[in-house]
Length: 274
Image (cartoon, rainbow, N blue to C red; front, side, top):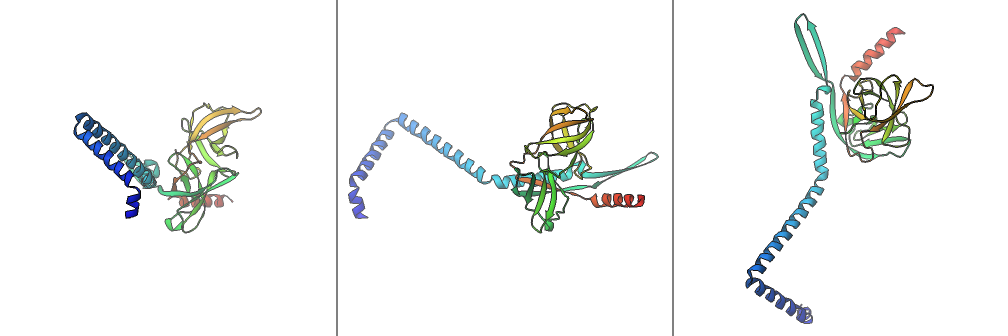
């Protein structure tokens, strides 16, 4: 230690003298005192701002997860998540709202967009109540449907899959068709089976019907262009998907609570016709 100080004695002496000069300059000049104070305040403020930015970035993941949980709770409170049964007897109207859909938050742990058949993997599984066929959405729009389930995870057949068919309609007039993906751009899909007599405009909003077991009215996308091919009776409508599949992080798994009842009734009806 002594040898280190001895070797650097001139440097240490210079630093001490410089510090002493600086002290004398500040002590004998109110202008210098004010300047130093302002400079130190600026440095302190900038340092605190940088620290706050770092803290916000570190907490970003937990904040996003919290927002997703809050959004799921709000979805569960929506009127569209409930089934309304109304009975009119003379002048008496009895209306009962029963929960029809519940929403569960999930984190995307794997995702593909550059294949013909794309899937997602979520961090929720059978132990959380997830079942094959459950619809999946993001805060922006539809994502896909649960394909397979393990205790802790599930895979989702994305909208970006050749076998995906989503019943979708125009928000303005309820005309509906099938939404499919052509395997090219992950930002666009095609709405088919819309009769050529239906008025279609650029910017029209496309939402879900309840036919695919999504809640009705979930955002799908907007029309960017439409044409009727020669000899066809239907529009060929290009839709800009509202959900961005390139940066999905949190999604919502939907449980259709009345699905089994509906499917059982439809199956029994078909069997009675045979």
